[in-house]
Image (cartoon, rainbow, N blue to C red; front, side):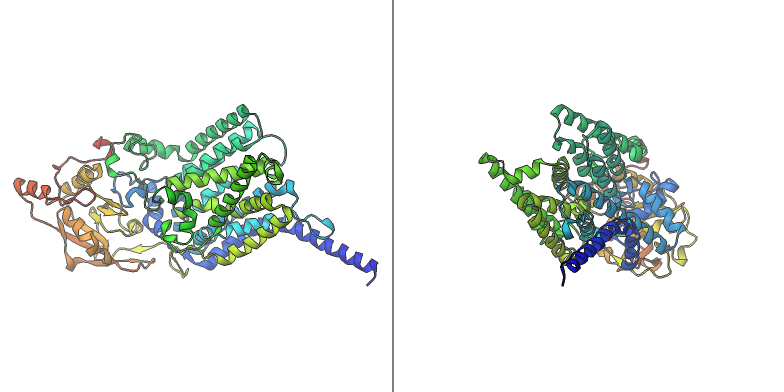
Length: 593
């Protein structure tokens, strides 16, 4: 082999590599279409949240049922319905596969944002070199973006209507606005970043930890403290404007109805008269004690039930947590030894690097304290490959750091098991559909009591709009005597002269549903029961039955029964349809104040 041949081969390899590097952005830009196809391959999402409230909330907003039905989806009834309206409209007008593909495409835009963020962060380090020093600047960011999008949570919710992969677009978009290839962080850029993430926050409040992280991100930039503080204020103002733009109309409605713009959250903070109904926040996934707060990724990575009801396996957050501890230890050691070293120089050399690390840290801390629910961490989890690359390069240098990152990404992809949110084959039936039993096709003007922890609000659009739905319990909620919703429900039932029916899943009858009906003065009329058909095909059939009223007790007997009520937190045993409240003591939420 001659020298000329060797040089020619190397030149040809460099040319191929150069064309490959140029082709990567094209692949990234079409990746949302591939995500849409992957969504179709995975099947139709039938997740609990969709059936519990996403489908119903869109229908309820369009038909103005807020003050008509009572808690049909428990506290989820009161969440901002903007995205749910879009979903309901799509489901009602488009074929199911078109809806699933469109959702997958929208979710896939996360890949583009992850890629662009990685390019800006890693640009100054010039990490990827191929033949003859040829830059392959797109290869590593593409790997980080695809690996990030392949998380258990993202793959589990791809093509579903959980909203998490939609609001993550606003967080990553805001982060991309903050990152820059040159120049200083301006107030205009900080405001724009806040505006973007604020819009996402208005659509889904669980983005709050990451919105706060965007607001505080300018603190990591190398500017005078006054300028950094001004940028934080500008970002905060942007968040406020964005929040009002996407959620202001609903916040005003919630304040008018319940005295709390963020209802059902923070009721006691705002002094809402509905504070006794509960806080609306699920605390069951939070760490138990200080020690768990400190090492929670170690715990939930091997016991996924601690932060999710769906099965999943993903070690991204655990790996990032371990490497972050190593980095913190090295930096602290260098500081104590008063030695600058390569680690500290790499960390100090780029505002973008520090900003991403700082934003991720704040976002994780906020998520840990507020929610610790797995799906809500998907914006952070998708960033973990980029975080790993940053931290490994800082610790070990470019060559070893990149090699370790690639190896780590391959391991994480192989070890991931996507979150097991329910899916089914597409078939030819509607995306969400239900059919009222033949015996009740002409049902009008009825009150239908719902009980049992089951996702059955998606049945409601199938009924005539004149029927009123009242939920008695479900999703960690039970009526209490001091609860305004109790008075409202008791008043509706007591003042209703038409038919009263029950809707419940068969397996929930002996798990509290029958007791809930009895608490409001009814028993199930078994011969009248019929099955509500559904394209969802839940594990147990849902029954629609007529209810028979229990005989009313005398005042003395009612008082005695009331004294024998269960402890707070369980359904009170109202021996009279109106419970302990006189007829007419309820009404609309605003009237109860």
